[in-house]
Image 1 (cartoon, rainbow, N blue to C red):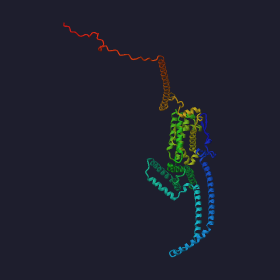
Image 2: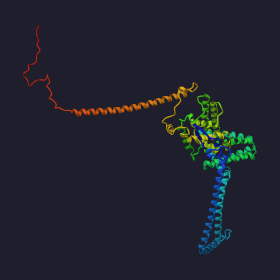
Image 3: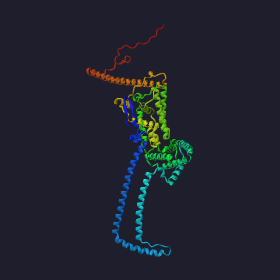
Amino acid sequence: MNLKSERRGIHVDQSELLCKKGCGYYGNPAWQGFCSKCWREEYHKARQKQIQEDWELAERLQREEEEAYASSQSTQGAQSLTFSKFEEKKTNEKTRKVTTVKKFFTASSRTGAKKVAQEKIVKQGQLGRERNADNILRDLKEIFTPSWELASPTEVLAGKLKEIQEAKAPSPSINRQASIETDRVSKEFIEFLKTYHKPGQDIYKQCKLFLDTMNHKRDLSIEEQSECAQDFYQNIAEKLQTRWKVPPEKVEKAMDQIEKYIMTRQYKYVFCPETTDDEKKDLAVQKRIRALHWVTPQMLCVPVNEEIPEVSDMVVKAITDIIEMDSKRVPRDKLACITKCSKHIFNAIKITKNEPASADDFLPTLIYIVLKGNPPRLQSNIQYITRFCNPSRLMTGEDGYYFTNLCCAVAFIEKLDAQSLNLSQEDFDRFMTGQTSPKKQESDSFSPDVCLGVKQMYKNLDLLSQLNERQERIVNEAKKLEEDLIDWTDGITKEVQDIVEKYPLDIKPKNQALAAIDSENVENDKLPPPLQPQVYAG
């Protein structure tokens, strides 16, 4: 589907949402743009062609095998003709002796060894051909017969024993919760079928047989299991209309209940199985949405004003519904979450513009809701709905329309680039790497009715921006101070070296120490003696 960018808006021609075969139903990217019906027709054509080629190959190989076998038998017979006569005579003699002894005890028929050998060879050839034919017929039967009709009584009994063993085994709380929900859905399904009387019993038997068959088809790929489920939906719908003569208004209700009963039991086996790359796709989409957290409604040209309290509430409800989709087990319930989300989006656009919303307004807003909500396991839920939902819901009606738009929104997010948002490649790369972010709305420009938490958030963002600028300024000043200190140190060192070179240091010998005044003068005795204290009588 061709997604276009036009003046910062996202426009999708509604004709591109329809099946590319022109049947009028909604297409799906998972079905290469076909609707469910056309996709199955194309799939069966390719499959029939492959079956025909395999059949021709099997016949050719069988003919070559028979020709080679016949040729080897004729060659072997010609080479061992002489030896066979001797062996025949020896065998006859031995058989005659043994028969003479055995005839006293039991009745026996005298059959030549050569005849026995020939019969053995013929039987082996017939058995080989019968086995080849049986294998081919069994393969063709598995291809053309609905899978739920292939289970033998032994397989059904083995499935029952397996279910009993699983029921006896201890299970964690999550399994107990699932078991409670399964029991509740089973009771509701039985109560619903009571209103259909005799057809209700046949419907219940067909559903049980299908579940037993699916339990023995766990080794099939998820696409083959999906094909089995789609075949079952189609066959049971035809039986409701033709064999059981159920009114058309009751057929849809019955199909919804059948889908709910079956997929509640099959959910843990077919949702995001380990044999697929659904989980890898989920992580890739989540990482992509996180990297696009900076995208604003203005970039997508979203006609929604979240400053209006009613619009803000609608946006919150839409995000809640799209996130709640992951908690549902039935494809129809997941579709219901998408439908509720879409209706909230239409209401938000209508309140903002004071006029009915258009399809061109809806898709950009849906993309914005997905980016803002980042629903868990988004790809797994889309694949699960595509594989196991009743195809009539995806082909027509509002559920099919909203689901197709959600697939387009996810495809747009995966391929979103600078041109889609009318940005330069440089700005787009800077936003994606987190180097910078688009300019936020000033907190002073908010209306008084805006939530205090939103005001505080933008205030904190402004404060963080100021702190970031201040930190960058301090770092630059610190680097400048470091350079100045290095230059000052180098200058002082140079000046000292110049002075030392200009005035070299002359070191003189050490002078003798002077004698202390109070020390005894031994060498010079001419000094008068020290004064002695005298006492006068008064």
